[in-house]
Every structure is written in C-alpha cells, then in structure tokens.
Image 1 (tube, rainbow, N blue to C red):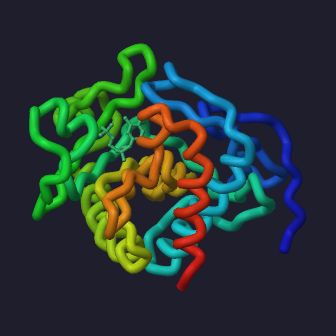
Image 2: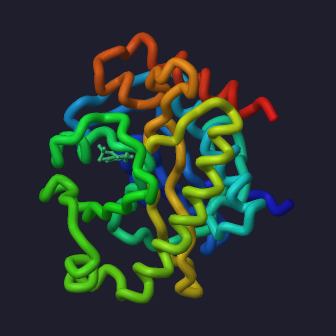
Amino acid sequence: MNCIIKKNILSEGKTKKIYTTNNSLEVLIHHKDCITALNGLKKNFLQDKGVLNNEITTLIFNFLNSCGIKTHFIRKINNREQLCHKVDMIPLEFVIRNIVAGSMSKRLGIKEGINLYNPIFEIFYKNDKLKDPLINDHHAVFLKILSYEELNTIYGITLKINHIIKKYFSDKNIILVDFKIEFGKNHKNEILLSDEISPDTCRFWDKKTMKKLDKDSFRMGLKEEVFDIYMEILKRLNVS
Ligand code: TMP
C-alpha cells in the first residue's frame, strides 16, 4: 500500500475537511467533531462525533462498494480520516423518502409515519445563500448542473442504493425512513456516490420502539443523548 501524504486543505464544510494528497486523483476526508442543523444555524461541538461518523460511513460505503455501487470511498486511514477518489461535487442533494417525515410532512401537511410504497425522490439545490431550495429536474437542467440523461442515471443508482441499504438497516432492526446522498464526477466523468451516509444524513427509527436514532435527536434539543444514539447505530452496524 502506497504511503499517503496529507497536503493542503481543499475545502472545509460544516462537518468535514477535505485535503489534497500526494496523489492528484485522491483526497483525504477528515470528519470533525461538529454537529449542525437548520442549515448551520444550530451548531455544536460534540466530542468524538467525527470518529463515530467516520466509522459508520466507512461500514456503509464498504458495503455499497461490495454490492457494486460506484463510490468515491477507497478506505479508512485512521479514526477520523478516509481516503477517497477525488471528484467534482454535483451541487445537488438527493433525498429519498420511504416514509413521510421531516420537511415533506410539514410542506404537504401530512402526518409523519405514512408508508410510501414507492420511494419519493426530491432534489435540493446546494446554495447557502438561497438556503438549499427544493427544485425539480427541469430546474437542474436549466441551471446546467446535469443533463436529463445524467439525472436518470443518478435516479437509477439511487433506487439501487435505497434497496440495498433499506435491507441492510432493517436486518439491524433499523427503519430507514429517509436519507440524503450526494454525487460527484471523477476525472473520467463517471458519476460516483460521494460525501457520507450517517445518522447526520439519514432518518433512522428503531423497528420496535420507533425511537429516533439520528440527528433529529439534536434538532429536538436532546444534545446529551446524541452521542449515545450515534453509538447505538454503530453498535448495531457492527453486529453481522
Ligand atoms: P428533510 O425532511 O429535512 O428534508 O430531510 C430529509 C432527509 O435528508 C433526512 O434524512 C435528513 C437529510 N438531510 C441532510 O442530510 N442534509 C440536509 O441539509 C437536509 C435538509 C436533509
């Protein structure tokens, strides 16, 4: 295995820092001990949360890689960092909903908890100034973010990912209510699943008690419980 040299900071987001490495096609992603909600309006330091998210994301991306999904993830380097293929991020958040919750419940005035027999896709335009508005395919094409063909490719990959991880979590007594994923393009213009999948980016409910096992606990002000909840997710993922 080649030696990885961490070089310059490429970008810093709310919960991660990206570094260049001695290989121009690879980056190092560092998970910070930071938890945010409401587009960064609510923000807290949470000791070792970066360690948990790095480990949880590693387990899920390793599993997706083994199922043939093309992702940016190469391997975990240490407890806070992972090596990934360098991509240009597509400025869209893809949300997949299996059960009505969160903003869909509020926007449409529908009670949380209703099963969606076909998953519902939403796309949000990543733009801090505009507060990441909900857009549709036509807007994304008009904004020259993606072509219709690329959007269809991503929806196809997204359906597969939903199918794979819904079962993966269900086997661990976790209901995957909804989740957000992001994609990037590598130097060959291939679309790769990128970013992370963790309790920061998913709604998880316990199968038996329906307890919320994700960042909603932080959104609801239960800061003391958040670490234990993320730890519980990691514990369940580590049981095969
Ligand atoms: P929402 O119901 O607030 O729109 O969220 C849907 C899912 O997307 C939920 O699992 C949380 C995730 N999500 C993020 O990961 N980042 C975000 O910025 C937003 C708005 C949602």
